[in-house]
Image (tube, rainbow, N blue to C red; front, side, top):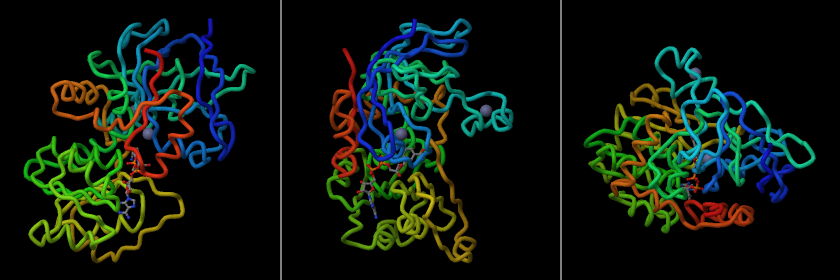
Length: 363
Ligand SMILES: NC(=O)c1ccc[n+]([C@@H]2O[C@H](COP(=O)([O-])OP(=O)(O)OC[C@H]3O[C@@H](n4cnc5c(N)ncnc54)[C@H](O)[C@@H]3O)[C@@H](O)[C@H]2O)c1
Ligand SMILES: [Zn+2]
Ligand SMILES: [Zn+2]
């Protein structure tokens, strides 16, 4: 029997989202139905609503979620009903050319549910990032459920499902920040603050936060940044150099998605330093760099998707650190809201007022 639940749907490009009845089928082979407890509001949900991802409307939004497994398909052994899980958008296939070469975090063929969730009239929904968790229940591939310690608060744990993991991993995995490194993080929203936290966890001795907004710099300092640089007041490249003995940072992380900031992060690096790109550009954006600077400075330029994470390896470990008080996931939860609050939360996100609004469902 399909479940009839409430969910937040983007019906057409640019239009406010609406609360709809969603039909969630029973899980088939390789699938699981999850009772969603909490789901963060991410920029990507807004990009879907704006038609910036693709035109497969209507979308069932929401993808940074934690909840409890309700039911599993006949052949599923990785999770059981009652398990507390974080949903992920990297259920690796184990068979593609990247998985076969031992690099599953680049998997080119990740799994999603094969059945469709629908509106009451049978219209098939496209779940955001194959998840669709602004809903009381959602249908996913079983591999999208990562079991973690159930003592974690769902509203904090769910954030590992996207933006916070992207920032932590940009520092820890893509940037390979290590003991004694200097790091500069450009843009201190939810993703940038997570990059700050990841740099601290990885043992950086200096973490320089760069933003235009004093409130965001304040938050970055709370996540362990050693310096805050307001790029609306000073040249951030000069300032990062000055703070690093005239050299530049070992790792610069771009967490805005803006060509000018990308350029600043490029030039704020020390020789042989690493530039990590986490901010998502729009298709029209260009960067123009002298090739001699690219060559002459050496080092690495690395885009980072989902922080190069492997959910099965990283989510349980990060939840353990959270429960030990070593990773402040609660600090990313600016407010909790009901399902009906998603549209207003988009506006607060656009105005830069929150790190994360988190939808909390039921109790
Ligand atoms: N690569 C991934 O896997 C991944 C995953 C999730 C999000 N993202 C992307 O990461 C980026 C950041 O996401 P977020 O949720 O933190 O967004 P956000 O809007 O909350 O944060 C952006 C921050 O950048 C600051 N900023 C804007 N212009 C700036 C400038 N010129 N110099 C310095 N700071 C500036 C803003 O004040 C804000 O604090 C977005 O582009 C988002 O789409 C990437
Ligand atoms: Zn694969
Ligand atoms: Zn996201």
